[in-house]
Image 1 (cartoon, rainbow, N blue to C red):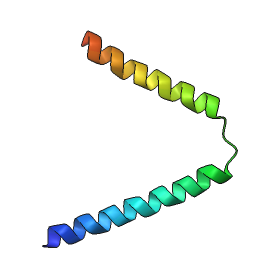
Image 2 (cartoon, helix red, strand yellow; image 1 turned 180 degrees about the vertical axis):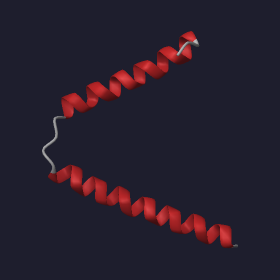
Image 3 (tube, helix red, strand yellow; image 1 turned 45 degrees about the vertical axis):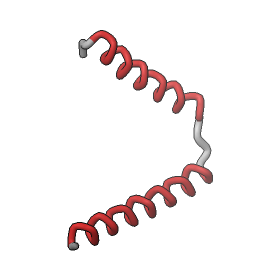
Image 4 (cartoon, rainbow, N blue to C red; image 1 turned 90 degrees about the horizontal axis):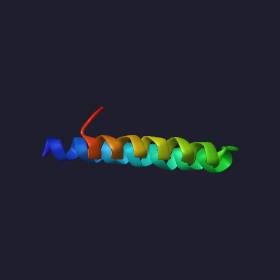
Amino acid sequence: MIRFVVIAIMVVAVWALLVKAVKELKSANIDWTGVTTIIGFIALAFWLRHVTGMG
């Protein structure tokens, strides 16, 4: 039972942090082109590692 309480508290904390992060991102002036480029390179690195087995 205590495990469910701890998990519930963790879920609520993560949800609250996510809501706060979304509010901050909406009000911030962010260069989304750079962010998507970085995410694309990271995704490409994981995909190449998966395909080639190296890295």
